[in-house]
Image (tube, rainbow, N blue to C red):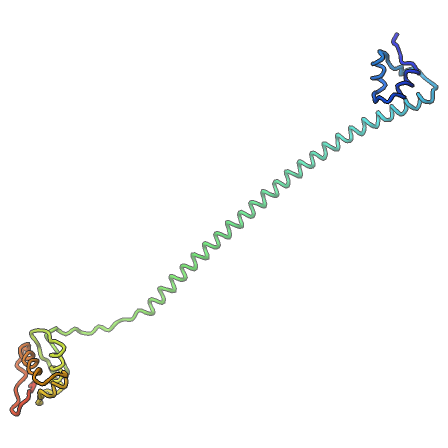
Length: 219
C-alpha cells in the first residue's frame, strides 16, 4: 500500500519558503499524494481547487502563447518577404529609370551632334562662292582693247609699267621724261627699259620719233 503524504506534511510544505511542487516534495519524502481521498479540510479543498485551476489556466495560456508566437513569427516572416519583394521591385524600377535616362541622354546628344553637322554643312554650302574663271593669257602675250603684242619673255614690273604707258598713248610720241615720271626714276634709266622691251617683243612695234621720243606703232 503506497505511503501517502499526511496532512501535517502537507501543511509543512505550504509553510515552507522553498519553491517546489507538492509532487516534488512528496517524492523527496518517498511518498505520494493521495488524490482520491476526500477531505473536508477547507485548506485542502481550496488548495486542490486552486492548483487545478492554475494548472489548467497555465496549460491553456501556454498553448495560446505558443499559437500566438507561431502566428506572429509567421506574420513577421511574411512581412519580411513582402518588404524584400517591394525593395527588389523598387530597385528594378530605379535601375530602369536610370537606364531610360541614359538612353534619352545619348539620343539627345546624338540628335544634337547631327543637328550641328547639318548646320555646319548648310553654312558651308552658303559660304561657298563660285569663283569666276578668268582666261589666263599666255605669259608672252598682253591684250588691251584691240591691241595685241606678244613677247618672247615675261616682263618685269617696271617694263610692264613702261609698256602700259605706251599702250595708253599708242601711235603717239612718248618722251623719256614722261616715262621717268611713271617709273619715278632719273630719265637716263628709262632708255634701258625701252631697250629691254624691244628685245623681248616679237614685233618691232616701238619706233624712234623724228623730233625725239618713241612711238608704239600698232595698226
